[in-house]
Amino acid sequence: MASALLNTPTFALQPSAEQVALQTNYITNFNFLNQYLPDTYEKEFERYGNRTVSSFLRMVGAEMPSNSDQIKWAEQGRLHIKYTLCTSASAITSATATFTVADTGVTYIAIRVGQTLMIQNNTSGVFNKAIVTAVPTATTFTVAYYETAGQAFAVSTNCTVFIYGSEFKKGTNGMVGSLEAEDDIYTNSPIIIKDKYAVNGSDMAQIGWVEVTTENGATGYLWYLKSEHETRLRFEDYLETAMIEAVPAAASSGALAAGMKGSEGIFYVVNSRGNVWGGGTPTTLSDWDTIVSRLDKQGAIEENVVFVNRGLSFDIDNMLATLNGFNSSGVSASASYGLFDNDVSMALNLGFTGFRRGYDFYKSDWKYLNDPTMRGGLNTTAASATGTVTGLMVPAGSTSVYDQIMGKNAKRPFLHVRYRASEAEDRKYKTWITGSAGGAATSDLDAMEVNFLSERCVCTLGANNFLLFRYG
Image (cartoon, rainbow, N blue to C red):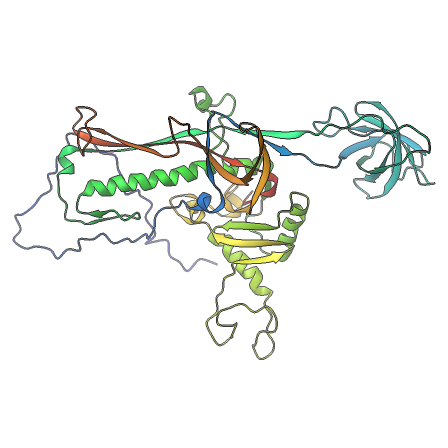
């Protein structure tokens, strides 16, 4: 069915900012030949409200200094041992068998003689319990089955194996060999973000009839104030969106050839080693059950904040609303939602701020995903929107990691920004004025140039606890 909302008139996407010359653009559109004066509204009307999109990182993370071009941290691996691509060289009903482990990245198995195993067929689900009697090579082990019937599956069948204990005879030696803990080491590199605003000295002395207004409270009739403040606001937004969208320069890429290295932004990291919901938006309770099941297999963080676009927000509201019960009189019979003590005769609040389904999920609208000049203007049709993000689930709280720069364990928010700083130079947010106008006296340029710079990257700790909602 066609949408009732017409395509025209629509919202404007043309940027209001434009790049102009600095020294020769004299104003020529004065006109006093007409004896009549218009009735003017001097103050700008803020038709798009607050146009900035930053706030996400301020809500969920922290900022802390760094002294290096590279940031490294270690994350714990799994405690228990499990392999999912194991094949037996023996036939069904065999009392013993030798297995080969073919899991990706495994060069030396952590299975030792005397350990007891659970072995399950990946396809049929039938299983055996067995004890390890030998470890002939780096990727093979031999078992003896506890069951009278012997091996329950055919030769060369893919199986999953995990260790659940050990068993030894009386008066025997202890376990042969030991296991060494391994950490996963992750790195990220800061990138330099810059911007600049310039105005010539003549225009700084030019009064305007429009009173400027910006989100950070700039007021007055000097038009360059508006442009300078909007440049500042735009730069502050980019400080956040760059941390969200940044990607590392791939090998043989044009960016790498140009000397750029890129950085690992939040979306890149979660796409690479986090969890991804590829169906756009989960719309049913069973969809969320699938998400909960995945979280059980990850870090199992109790509280999570889901930052959503408008579509995902409505889908969550609609899903929870269907769970709302009413009796025949229209009075709430169970988990009614609304205002004023859930009185059905009063105004209803048709939105939810959170729910619990195994874990606590708190919902928050993310303006960045709704703004039509940013990700809100991207295609969200399932058939043609591969990669379009509809939300991001972020674990609340902090985690303990080993910081290789500090040389010790430290508590860090799961999501935080590291910026370059030392005793002599702080590059968290630098701004300085050059030229010979506006109080500056650094050169003979008849202009004021306001420069902005920051050097930073984002650290996404425990990416396996994050979940990205997207299409495709």
